[in-house]
Image (tube, rainbow, N blue to C red; front, side, top):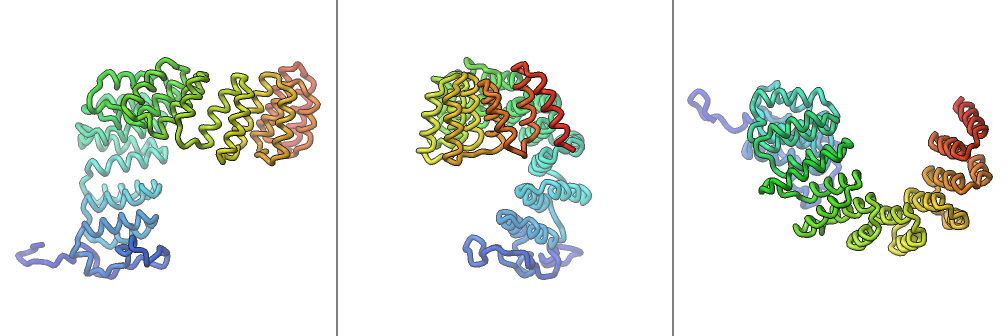
Length: 419
């Protein structure tokens, strides 16, 4: 660099002191992958400049050492936008959202220019922190600097932030201001609606996206996942089948995420045949997949089929948890299968299946629905650690049976147990 007519060495980039990670560096120093992560003397950093410093920051972040990334960052005297982005990303990628935002504040105080890489990380950090106030502050800043114009990544980050904070009207407003919307922007809005219990609007936006049919409106697996969730929540079987056809035609339906979403959609819609076919297409069946198919058969009274799948699940090496067991118990109770319900309770005890609070509550509900009040009371009296849900189950089921006096008695016992 030339200053005052003289050429200065590149050492002005960093402080003239040796950088060492400190005693908390416990990575495998013999690993070839981490060979580049060894402490470097200060005179090597200036030669490589910002590029080497950013690489070190990223490397320490990749081995979950953002504090060491910060040490490298602090060793640099004059920091440009690229270096600031590197340290913000180092903390953001390690879920250190508060430090990431604090570095952004420091960046602004240093009068360093922002760019379209800075904003999405900072806004996403605000979203993860549910910090609407900070997110709106950044939005005001971006609006003044006109960063939103023509940049879908920046716009999508604000759609994500507002949807995470539950402000879907603002999310939709930001989305409508994006001049060129890509699949990320569309997907963020669709999933935002679904996650905020506005599945109808989410499905409507997805249909709008598909009608446009441009290059930026081609759905990906995440888009279709949101669409299938919306269809399942609404019980929109016809729309779900149309999306399923689209997934098959585009090849997106081959992914594990989409296959599981299709299965979940059909089970929520109560389409047993389609659900079973979708289940068979899932290549890597996990506990969630097994629970979905067992649950839908149990819900519609196909107990023999659900029990068969329950045993097949264990043959496949999947151990049942409380949720799948409670699905079966609910089926026994809803369809008045007394002998089957009592037998399955015995199997739970003999085979040491999960007997957590979910299963205990399901057993209480089953016996009450079967009209076996003595069994329910014996089970309830034999356990001391019932939670609020357990008391609610007993009071609700007794109330349905017209046992008002027992409801009042349970209510009094609950009040006493709390003191």
